[in-house]
Image 1: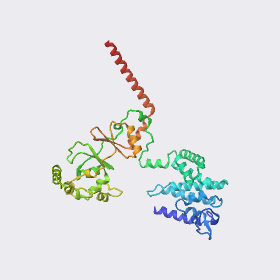
Image 2: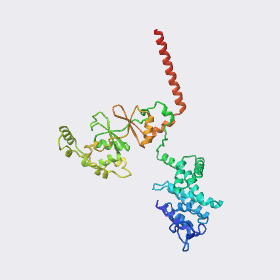
Image 3: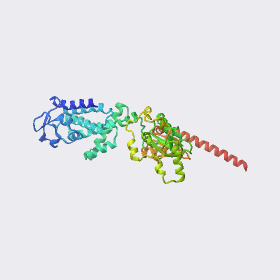
Image 4: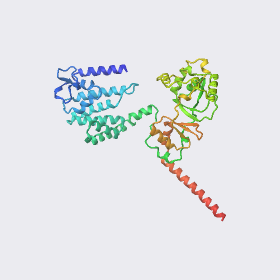
Length: 427
């Protein structure tokens, strides 16, 4: 990050000093205020064209390209140089693990190239800067309607609707043809292994008799409301899940196993950092007797961590690796127990196993879920549905559904015919 920042800063301060790439203009001949322009190495009352574009942070550079109607405000070589520097820097920096955007840089790059094209053709530079900005962004993100609405609304030029839409459509077509891949945001989802769900459930899955239990992933790892510390550490080491369903059973495994809530991995790691809330088997039996007798001192006997302290104990990213979990605990701590129930999310999103897969799809789309627990009639978790399972529904084709429907109708008709013959023979 430091190297890239140093290189860009060096280019932004070195290239404007080259007379072959930039020239000086008069500030008073321009529409925008003097704060938009950078004098750099030019005389008083003048501005350096390339320095003005490269050293203006945020949207000031885009504003200048959109607003300045004079052909001599920025030359062709200045616009091409600024656009190329930003493009190369963006290609290098966007793939790095840093906080960086792509929206504003692409608008700036497209505006530079669009204005340069207009200057070479002797056309209105502002118009082609706006259309070029939309085309530059549309060719990378591959969106049409939303981008057209954003550009026309931010520029307050509603009569630019048609040229901007044509430009983004052409950019989207050329981008698909040249790369053969989807837009940049779709590629990011693919790299992060996050399947994209379309707005509507696939047609084949909507009509077929597919239930949630048919698409769920089995083998759900659940924990009890009361856990031995050694068992909890073992679960966290073996399974790198972000959330765990909590069922109605104690440390010995007794209970009906009904779902009572959900707890995150972060909260479990936070609880393991507080051995003072662990309790021994004798203390647990004493607490159970107090609960049965409705003793008024029950709250004093239970060891519950307040939410403010739990929030402070939550580990920061990146989370500890499997081999690092439980290293702060002693052997005496490992044989103790902990209450999980006070820290639950008591209303997780769930769906019955016999519910339709289409309903699960709609819940994911409308609620933005990361996972969905599947339960049986006794409220016990039997599976989990993620985006990876739902994206498989797209493989169901229309033709397969039609064939299955025709086969079902044929079987029903055959059965009805046989029943009719049998009823007639009785008479």
